[in-house]
Length: 476
Image (cartoon, rainbow, N blue to C red; front, side, top):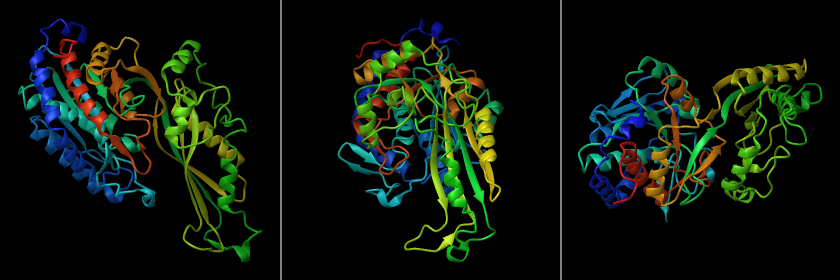
């Protein structure tokens, strides 16, 4: 069913919206407490030792949404980590929205920088600290609580809803495509709503219209068969850690451009009109430096910090390992060294092609004294929203009602692998309505959720359901 035809149906009763909003406001503190229960699961999808925690988190989430009235809620196993599917399809003639979020999180390291335990939700003022509070348990929970507000008051939803809560997003969603392809009927919908993106700031909502793609790799340099004494062999053995540093130093030139041959061949020329719009509506360089806690930005010449992080591709060293890292000295030449790399891709850059170019470059310049191997972990293509998204008017109206402000349109520098899969496998137009803030500290220590933004996010999700059903644009 097309959303355009649905808007001509009878609007949702304003009293149902008002009652749901009142319910959400009365239960704000309970919502925060339940989010704290959600955060306590150490659902780190990248660490095999925490696989049991990931599964336990999925079980808890399925049970929670089932208790709210989504009787179809179930845990769906995959080759890696399970996903949670839930639905309410009792509104004939109304559209169906697929609500996507992910309950897995990134590792909390470094632990010694956290002011409170990462998996103990800790409230300080208007902030709730803990791994996943913003990315993405808190944003996911805004939709769950909106569903609860309707089901516990009106006893029904104004539209049909399918929930897809994933447990592998932070490792590139390796199982999702096959699950979607094998269960198209269970995930059929008219649109997909994704809440895993940032707003411009408190009280400044945003709809994300473009995402960069992602390619993750690991480079390993192997030298001697075992670690060697640096006194006995120093100067006679090519150190793998030194070679790795030499290799990595060739990835960028002095001007901040990626120096891998052919890296920019498919990059679209920057559109002047879009750059002008980005300059008017996007974050300033000062804001980005403040959010990142840096004094001086760095990167490709000729582009603003916002453009560098969204409109242009980037190659990042995410981690280095090699040799002794304990306290005090140890005179050793390590047998191997590793680096984790990620590439942020822009439209027309293909993850496979870029991986090939990077592998050819590193292999070509590796000296014969060591061996280099490159492992690909995950990849996701870039995303640009369709210009005529069928649910865009509903999303804009929902933000206006929930935040009292018209949303701006932003590019985001991150990647969400599921977004492209929802479009290519299910044919759904993704709509990215996020409730995170730029300084939430996602993927770093002391991640936090701004609670006033979370509460307004719940109200925005309530309004979105009404708007998708054709409800009045004015708050009752």
